[in-house]
Length: 215
Ligand code: Z5A
Ligand code: MG
Image 1 (cartoon, protein in one colour):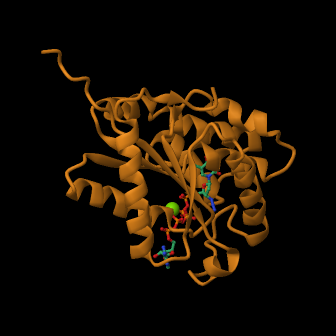
Image 2 (image 1 turned 180 degrees about the vertical axis):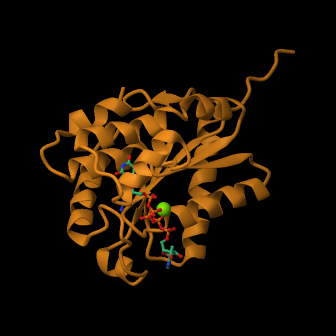
């Protein structure tokens, strides 16, 4: 009997504006999948623990100034440095949940103005393509109820509004599987919705090859 092809894990990205609940939902999703017997791992971008990540972290914390192209490329490099490990996990059947991904990369840089969308996308072309991108939609008023902005770079309402418009541009790309969810719901209700969409996606893609982003 021919061996059954190994089933791969799904790559699921969480995106959305500041305080939408990406990190909360990422943790909950991975916990729930594991409890249900599906191997799953969480990755967070930026990953501030690597050398590149430490540079990014000091930029975000305003301890360090970096030229705009430079920081864009560092965010991208911070994703690329995880690609071999991500591919290995996916091939082993582990579902990988990423808390922010290339879409944040493009949206935040292009919100600065003077950057073409194509230039912003280029460094991330060829990254593992998410099988699902969950966009956690939250209006600024609801986000404000979750506390004030932090002290990091980019954490102002005028900049976040520009970022949101850039996300909308990226969502027009129908070759990607965007799903918008209402992030104003309770943590628990949103979790249930996200878990159900994630499980559906995992089923759908388990025998399909992993794609390459924007290629
Ligand atoms: N950035 C970039 O420029 N280029 C790139 O390539 C990448 C990122 C990858 C740091 O990101 C910055 O880097 C970010 C984008 C830029 N700049 N900004 N803004 P980060 O991911 O490290 O940022 P963060 O500190 O994790 O914040 P966040 O992502 O904006 O928050 P979140 O993960 O979406 O939300 P949360 O931490 O889960 O929840 C926020 C609060 O709301 C917390 O108190 C929760 O308990 C509460 N919460 C969560 N869900 C709910 C619901 N459903 N109801 C009520 N309250 C809730
Ligand atoms: Mg977060």
